[in-house]
Image 1: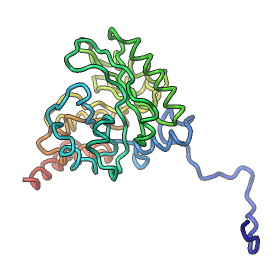
Image 2: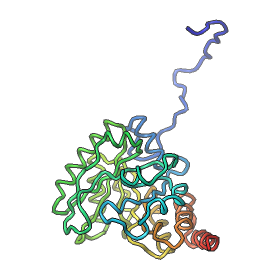
Image 3: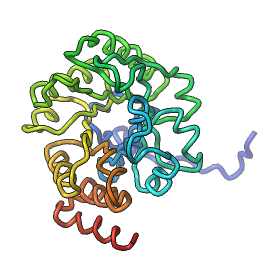
Image 4: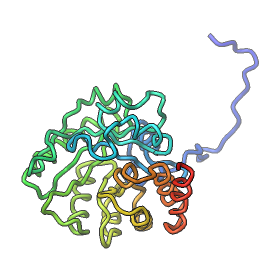
Length: 293
């Protein structure tokens, strides 16, 4: 038992005194438990309310795509600049040092390859393995309007239940089939469905009238990087996305397929976290490119 000598009486405080705890800074997250909020705060930085996620999960259906042939070589120079890494458990175990401090959003859906004509994924990573890997979030693709819509949404509902039980946030990837339009009507529909089902974060594509997508989704949205663009165009897209309500980006090809990936991720971070104009941020990329020669 602790020594009782020298105990100092508590000071008098008023009944309505504040505990010093502020309301949580992310929309749609006030009701979450401490563990969920803590993991959300790892993914989306409290200092700015923004995030630059590095998506390197493409191999789960594309194989060794350009820029991801040797995962260690891709990740080693970039991990320190990423606010979060989105990847598969195989790559996490084989190609990421346990000393890396970037939080992990684990890709937990799959079951098809790029050779398949139809979008037919399901949840394929046990929640126990997500816990073992100490992940901060879990990502699953939903295919709204696709032939296997019901299957992906059913798997998503099961993942949501497991995520709440374990205190791990779930990120919904609003995947788009080959024949679907990436417009505000479809993306706002998909994003809202994901949020209504319990998603804690939604990843979706940038589109015209993107503000309609972000404003009608009650949880944070991150913009998917999509196909490789010229560096300035990618920075403009990132700038427009956060200006129109996204909390950040989840970029892959526009970073790791750049001719200077480190310069590009630094430039993206300047745009996302510090509201740098793309025309100025591109100089960060150009300067890094010169130094790396």
